[in-house]
Length: 355
Image (cartoon, rainbow, N blue to C red):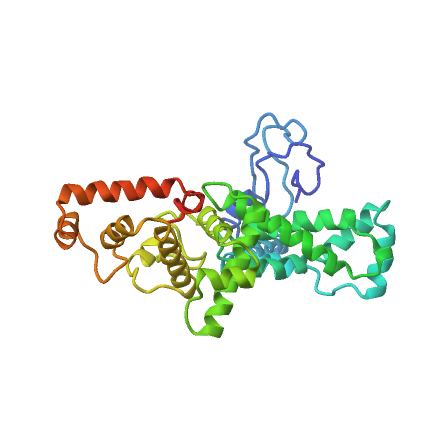
């Protein structure tokens, strides 16, 4: 049987006489002995390379030809189903090199990287799993795992170009730094509405890790002073970093890629249940406010503490006036005076947005 895709070297990639047409015609074909003729007309009149006398000269159709085509279609369907079932990450992992480089192979390739593109590509493929391992520690920070892997691969390429094998350390040790750097930079650039400098995100990560460590050791949220001593940072710096790195969240945001229903409203539903980090942060805010109020004269401090609930209960201006023996208007004036005076202090200016 003669087909343009099989026998004739047809240069037209859009010639309609292809496997699809063969399969469509197969249901009308019932092999009877060795001879059965079927005419397929090429619908593409511009295909002069294979168009021949308003149709095709067909020979004997062989059932084995169709079986081969159908088998390829079956394999293709199975592969598509496997892709849908596994997902992108699993498919990517399956494509990676399963055998890591030995120390000797790594050194041999590292010596050739400078002038050999094939060696650099082989070195890259052998270390892609390192990117996946590092990316798994940066999940739930605003970027999907595949996005993190893509950014980490850029860092891996950078590490390969800068690696100096003469220094004696393993490539994975050196590459991990660049992989983490590009992932953290992508998180700060893409996962936030407002871009936050990378060095501030690194400090914020240390602060939150210290909060969790102290929470476990002290069995209570740490104070701002305790955090300052452990981290070696000024209290104003800690407040500033936490304010700048506070992550805005969309109401449509998902907790992770696998959770299709629980968005931001999942968290809004119960604001009384705070995580250790949030509890420590709230305690730091209260402590910072108390330190700010200590800067005021006693009378102004008393009004502010009653109004903002830093004493037994939170009072209105009228109730404050009754307790202090002054009018409501006078209580309002004292509160306004207290706020104006607080604005003049540098400590309060640094933390006002944080609070």
